[in-house]
Amino acid sequence: MRLGVLDVGSNTVHLLVVDAHRGGHPMPMSSTKATLRLSENLDDDGKITRDGADKLIATVDEFASIAKTSGCGELMAFATSAVRDADNSDSVLAKVRDKTGVDLEVLKGTDEARLTFLAVRRWYGWSAGRILNIDIGGGSLELSNGVDEDPDVAISLQLGAGRLTRDWLQHDPPGKRRVNVLRDWLDAELVEPVKELNAAGAAELAVGTSKTFRSLARLTGAAPSGAGPRVKRTLTSNGLRQLIAFISRMTNADRAELEGVSADRSQQLVAGALIAEASMRALEVDTIEICPWALREGLILRKLDTEMGGDLMVSDR
Image (cartoon, rainbow, N blue to C red; front, side, top):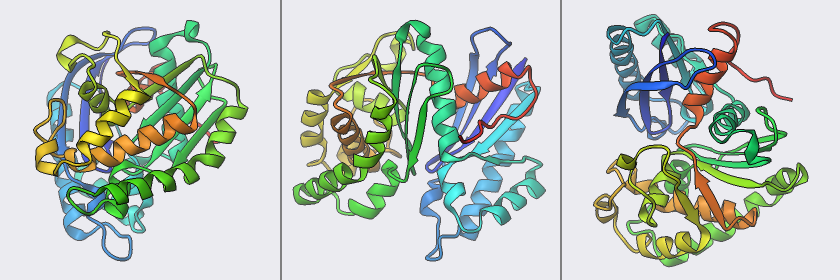
């Protein structure tokens, strides 16, 4: 069956079209993205602006049409942090549904963590043992730890790369002092969540998911995306420290010229690197593997597990 997965994130709207069947490997057929920066289209009251809502409606309508012409038998549409945190999310979702016919499902942060963990577990298999996963989004940071397909611990924190860029790193370049202050703040924010993660048990494999981790790994020497998804890619704490010292002195425009860094993500690259560094430091992880599967694949796998029916959400414990 051909499925479409429409992902409304803090920075982009992403449509992934796959051919999939239960027990099989989801085969990507096409990928379409649009940069909306929805998290930046909030007014002083924390509401998505009319302009932001109009852009969202137009993009969802366009991508739904692409899914239809691509032969998708079903479109799974969901939204994450930017919509989840907006004070007027219900009204915006209603407008999207009325104008496009697409019913966007808002995922809880902990469900993001669990579904991403499912994708990671399937990618690496049971032989990987206990897995620790770190996923850096635009609006939130998801952390999970477990030995099964449903993690023992799933945590979502409002520590996304876009959010911290807006709150902490407004200058271009951000400046050494500001970077160090954010480092210290992140260390303090992660103390309690890390205690909860570590209480579940020591991981045998540490994994990073998300575009942020892929970009950081590429900048520290990992294979380019053109080498294919099955090439092993890693990110080390030492390489990350050296990279931060380099990119934190650069302007957004200069970072956008780096290989593997898109122009729409260059602005939040420093914050993303600092979140990755702080997470690895707090968890005492020196090396993480980069997994090509994440939330979208987790949703597909959950759908397939329920034989193309049932609830996509994973209940909070």
